[in-house]
Amino acid sequence: MAATGDRTRHPELALARWAAENMGPEERAEATVFTSGEHCPMCSAAHGWVGLGRIVYVHSSEQLAGWLADMSVPQPPVRTIPIQEVVPGILVQGPIPELTVKVRDLHRRFHRRA
Ligand SMILES: [Zn+2]
Image 1: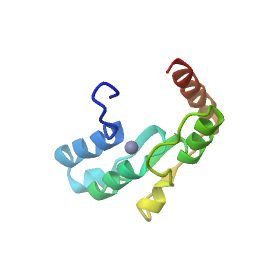
Image 2: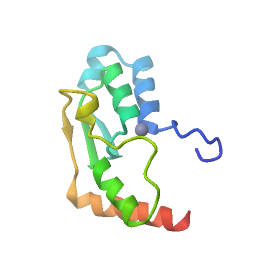
Image 3: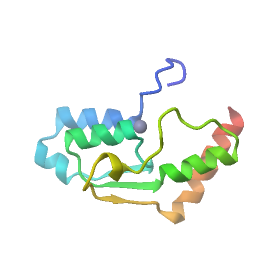
Image 4: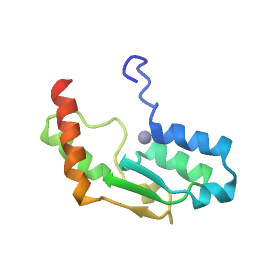
């Protein structure tokens, strides 16, 4: 990802495109996408445009923004907003507190290394 400089290469976007090519509309609507971090607005939009179903995430975009601020890491260039602000009416579950701490520690390790 960093080697190409293409910061749009998010797995959630690739997944939405894959689903559009490989699943029918009903199958997509019944699908649940599990992810560590809440979708960014770009991926939320792709998810909504292809009609995928429920999203379950471990930590919210708001939590990530807070962790980045705590580590003095620059914020993403795109605003972190809840998925429901991009895709009204979508079923979303998260954060999952038991797992949030583990993902936060992964982000801390990644940014310490960078
Ligand atoms: Zn994204």
